[in-house]
Length: 430
Ligand code: 4AD
Ligand code: MG
Image (cartoon, rainbow, N blue to C red; front, top):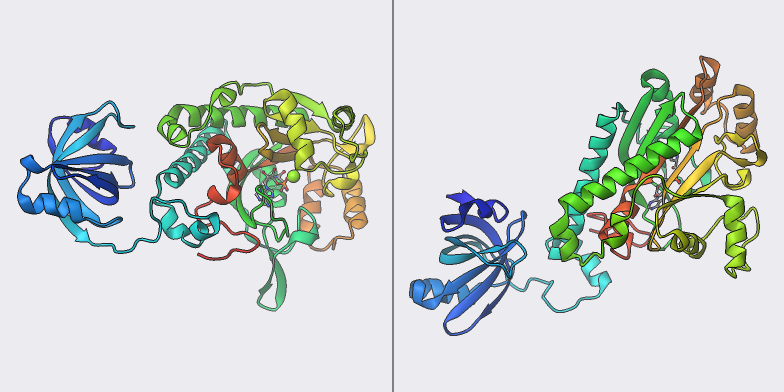
């Protein structure tokens, strides 16, 4: 019977064949332990000299790392392994030998591993991170489909910039100038006026010269937009969505969290509602904490966000930032016109901002004024202004960065390990 490592649990005490790669091995004169992986999981194969023919035992001792093979044997329960079972091997058929595999069980530096990202993806921890990423993607579709959002795909090649012009990737669109999308928001706003509740999930590009553990040049963003929705209602959707994602990962990725040695006590505490603190109060709090470098009107850096997050130990919304440090489209705060109706969601444990969101300006004259103040070309935003010309309604939305969320939930230090092939300031290969 041909099966996989994951499905082998249904074949205890039965003989099966699995297509696999060898990741590591250990042997003595009488027994060989083969560490196997097949994409669905990792499992040990035990080859006992007395139970197999001489050639098979010799083969088991000689197999090299990352050789591909079909392996046949009986699945037996084993409480010491992650999965709870292993294989008592009967025979091995080599598919293709691998020699001098560059990534050996010894320690390699990160740059070396990143140069070999196409191979590094095979390792147990990297495999676990991608599984968690996959679960976040699955839970995202589940959440938005279950709550009545329609998926709308905004374009990648665009003529307008939602988040400021300094970080745009320029390209030629025949004889016109174009940019790679830095957010699908403006198009989602148009779609929300057609469908009410919409979301998107796609790649976004930021030519940011940032070399931090939170910045990628290309990342995936989940964005949602809702018509007839004020900022507070949007915050409720955000906290429900994030809670759903956290719970799904805790429930469906136990093995992966274990492999990553992720401490989950803090994740288990994540539940709605999330604490909220205004930007004004956050500045006061930081001053009390001894941050002398922060003045009202300045954006927070990573140390500021971490100090605020540590205080709550939960995801926390920082609301109502100063107008002058946020994009042109945000609705003014009626209680203080120097601030806007927006929030950043800061993840605990130092993972930083994972969501940016706001209520959008719905008044035509005000939006025209803001486009003018930001020195944006009104012609490229004409379609966006139309949304205010023809039946404008209050509406709000947000965007969650996938890779930062993967980093937080899987507990990896740097976002470069959360994308299969990360695009970084100094990396376009492999
Ligand atoms: O805060 P940002 O820039 O918000 C927007 O783009 C809005 N238009 C979204 C909306 O309202 N529809 O980006 C949203 C999120 C951030 O909170 C962060 O998680 C992630 O995208 N992000 C990045 N992730 C990795 N690398 C980068 N360079 C990122 N820039 C933003
Ligand atoms: Mg932001």
